[in-house]
Image (cartoon, rainbow, N blue to C red):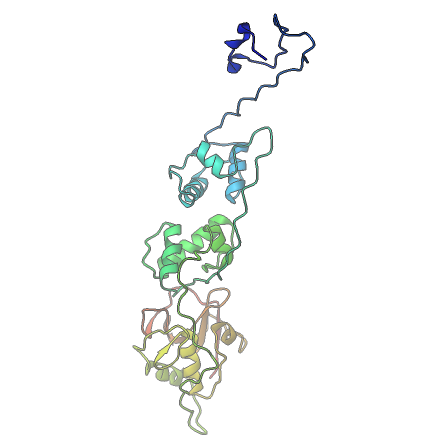
Amino acid sequence: MAVPGSLAGLAPTAVAAPVTPQAAPGVPSALPQAPVTLPQSPTSVVVLHYGSTGSLVKTLQSRLGITADGSFGPITLRAVKAFQERKGLEVDGYVGPLTWAALGGFPGTAPAPSPTPAPPETCSSYVLRYGSFGEMVKVAQSRLGITADGDFGPATLSAVKAYQSRKGLEVDGIVGPITWRSLGGYPCDTPDPTPAPDPSAPSEPAPEPEPGASYNGQDVLDIAKKYLGTWYVYGGSTPAGFDCSGFTQYVYRQVGVNLPRTSLQQSQFRSGVSLNDLRVGDLVFFYSPVSHVAIYAGNGMIIDSAKPGTQISIHKMWVSPVKAIRLV
């Protein structure tokens, strides 16, 4: 049917409200007089930035997975920039139309669609802790905003603990599944470290203790000093290379004490002694859960196989131990 000329010039955008068209000359009056529903104009997007406050900021924070206090401060700014970087957006810290869209849409009268859940990771998360080394440490350091040198040393430990404190996570200095998730997810495309050797594989046994001999803490330290300069080897338990618990196990075997293999198991081998009464030869344990062990050398010093890229050495304790046990 031809549209009457009197209606041909009307532009839909010029109509401010739903209208009922009038019968025009030449148009049969029997035509249905149904209202014409025009699309509503989209809700205006409110741009949020540092210093913004209110319920929209709470919505933003909730979608970012951080504490929703309604205040766009330094923590929210960092979270926004990290989100923008992960999504390939301009990293400016402003929550405008594109960032709102990536977050699931600006909250309007209708509920905003939930973001599509990320597919489950198909790789295993590798736990990073003091002494870890390699590409995954670089990824964690980059996300923490510190120098990415691949060495999980004191500076990285402090940064991890500060981040965990800000995010309300357990402050243990260990980058496990929950901390990885908070940092944007585990980097599944990063190669895993070389796996630990099979503990059932034959290894070089430690020398047997002398029959009938008795030993004290200084004897333990003297034996440990024989291996000064030996390189750290992940999973190592022989003079070809030790990790922390492989070293203590090997040393104590020579004084007739058969320790279990891991630092956590060793910490449970015997009841603890006072940390204010440490003696030479005591085993001292670090972090919670325990993930490092060393032999106390006196005057606040320890001897240990600390981390990849280092050799067994005597040095000051970098953090306070959480437990100590006395075996001789």
